[in-house]
Image (cartoon, rainbow, N blue to C red; front, side):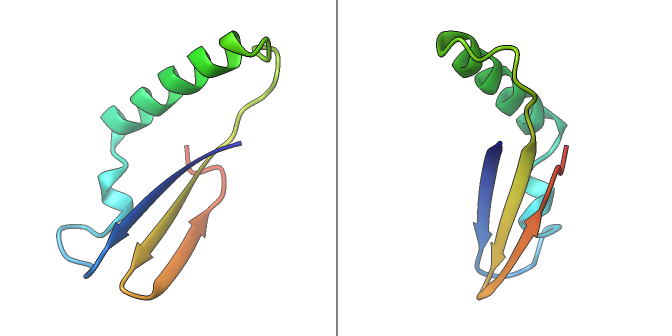
Amino acid sequence: MFCEVKARRTAGYGGAAAAVDQRKQQRLRDAASVWLADNDLSDLDSRFDVITIVGVVVEHYEAAF
């Protein structure tokens, strides 16, 4: 499992989750692929979660992408 954490003071501009756009998701997939290959774990399934923190509210999005 890989996890991206985004924090914001307020929910403006689409909130913290909006910061994990398709470009960011692809960069995370690419980084995970390299890490898995470097550690001989390429055959494992991967899951990408997102945790957002807005003010004091924490949300966990399992298998976000």
